[in-house]
Length: 287
Image (cartoon, rainbow, N blue to C red; front, side):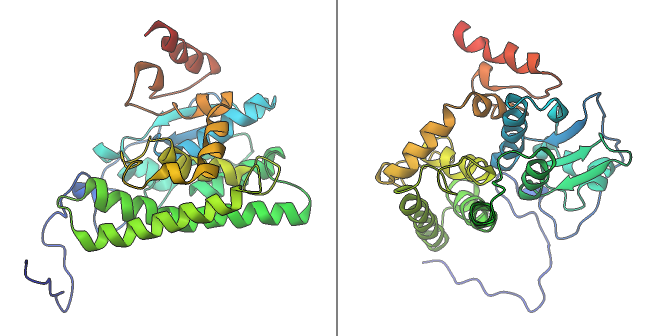
């Protein structure tokens, strides 16, 4: 049995935290180096990575383009968080929290920055008038679930995912604690989806896009290699919902943008036109 950790009276960061992302963690904000962000020709400029939070936005943009919204055309530039790109002066000016994704809407006289993935989804839904119901009751239900996701996903990512997959050592207490909470959240979703096609009811909304990238990827075996550990097959309604959303063409397109891992047809570090995605997806049939 190891000795119990006794917190110091005043915490100080004396060494790196360790683990996969430990060297990037620090207790202060702000940029660490000067670099201007690139800017393309499209109305929307996205700086991101295809983590679940990044996928939320690229899926939304591809869904908007599928609706015929030409104003949703976008340039997507890679922010390699493993290399610390999120701490450049240009990115920090776009998002002072140094987290992906971050969006700049250049279609307006004065460009508007939008950060936090949920805020970006809401901004785009209101700007283009899609994927957020206009009727008050169903709109509120969609926002209920969007904000549920924004509050719940950190327990899955920073809690379960960190201690189960990324921490430099495995410890029973945090893994048990966050596994219990992740399974509780999956049960919340499963009960909701038992009698509803989508989270807000019968209509696909930004709440589904946001939640799918985390919990959909999880039950489909795409997150933390933890599907068996969490017994995800027992959440049959979540799995049905996750598979149906995966089959949407815009989801298949959006999930690969700013991605640098996986099969060749899943990797598109940057996106500047629809043809970029078409060319990568064409590799699926070639492999």
